Length: 262
Image: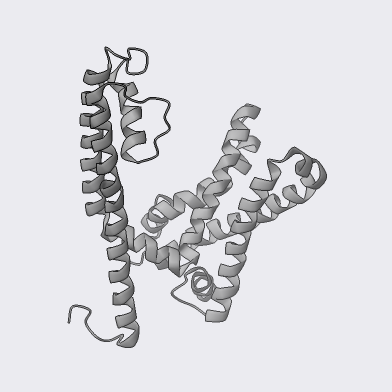
């Protein structure tokens, strides 16, 4: 039991020996970043031909470390979920968001040994290695802070996305009615008009589809102006929530025993 508590302390950023925690967290974080760089560099044929063995070694070492980490987290799950039994606690970890990320980050390596898979599928599954960067969330206080901010402001963000979605559909429908007769090829249906609506509302403006009628241009201008304000809404919501969370954490550091609501 003592060994399990030590392992759990090393894996859990909130517990255990601080020096040991840092070694484990820096090792895993470094491997994650190294994997992302390796995946990027491996896409260059000349680099892959010259340093293919190095990339393969990085992959194997990473798989060994991440597999041990995944197995250790399953083993110590009953300490993380103390209110659940041994089986339910492990099940809870394995099907949690971070548990699934941990599994998906190593699964592409093992699948070809278990099943006969088409090489094209294997190449696609390799992209799942990028999910390893999400593992940084548990090893970085800054990323955990951002995740908390998004969690607290999710209702406001969802409401904003809902409003934007309605505006996109309305704008696309109006533009289809105004431009279909003048440009039957460009605005042949509301789906095509929706692409224009997204490009205009986000102020990207690719220019591959644009109105030519007077009313169409007027509507396009209105949508573009609305886009300037609407696109800024989520930024303001997230920024406000971020500042509030930072202030709360600073207050708790100054007075850890004080009630935040005071």
